[in-house]
Length: 244
Image (tube, rainbow, N blue to C red; front, side, top):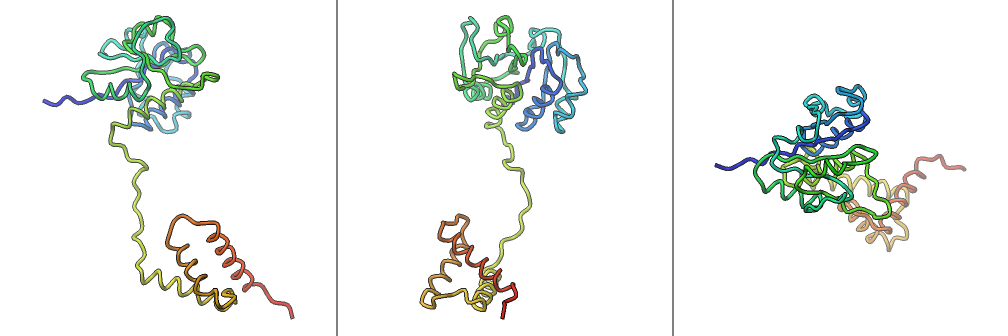
């Protein structure tokens, strides 16, 4: 029997602001995570400020569960990870979010990832409950991530092992036929001929090739952009009334 890898639970320990809980929910759902657990949120739960900040991630907020302690929040989890910049005196394996996500995908049993409160992060006793520390490689001179940023980094790494659409699929119009394309080229050529754009005459074949190249590739060179600007100027000038 093949074991199914369970998405990790995101555990927010003593979160302070409802807005930050909502933003964390939004970050989770962007990358396919829906299980949020809250440990003694400062302003209680539910929090009316969380919904607007979640920007539609209601499924996460509606399913969020509240616990009185970190131990209770992770009691059913076989693998517990604590996100922290510092080890705080606790000797445990330290992984990047990428490495931790690979580990979670490769093991059986439920996992939980702990995130500390906005101001101080996880306490030593919180980290002690974890088996592994997750630390984001960050600028040592400015190691400041807000709660939602920390959650989205971890959630993104988790999503790499999942089948998520990127970007969301949209129905595209069918590509134009070569006949349609040639008709457009011919129309443009006639308009430019009437405006006197093709000058001097000996440069006409090269200019026409440049125009065709521009219209058949996505990346434009500086020369091609200058040519297009010339086209627009010629057509704009043709529309203006000419003085006697």
